[in-house]
Length: 193
Picture 1 (tube, rainbow, N blue to C red):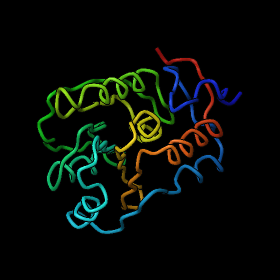
Picture 2: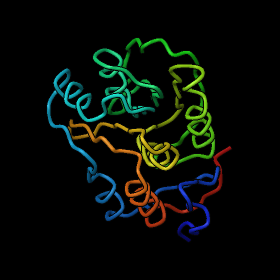
Picture 3: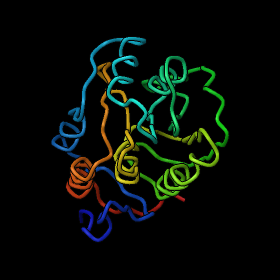
């Protein structure tokens, strides 16, 4: 059974565990990049992103390579990392977060634990400063709930596995696309804990 619309309505996402439907079409569609695409390497990619994002807040970066580049060349408000890149451990020193939250997210999933952590991080950043969400497992699919939870005026930035940036403005249009992807390609599953 795919997700009932009530679980992904009005920009909200229920704090349940969702698994990616195991299908070729789902993987093809989710690997397609959308939003504004930047094909340059860092630091040029971050400088181009900076032109688009400007002073908009919050700036949510998803993935270690993106978080590392934005830490070095620009800024971020919420970073979602697992300290791995292409399934290999990655050592880097993030810009000092004011707060760090942890969550567990198995491969091909969006866990309720990480939805809660993202919701909390997006509520905290303005008062606390930079908030890092450290994922035990994989952060790959967490850009979708980040887009749904991000307030108007913010941006979500993630790296495509082919090596370029996707910059998504947090608007009703892009939340609608994220909602549609969740409804079509995820199903509610038992929490692994």
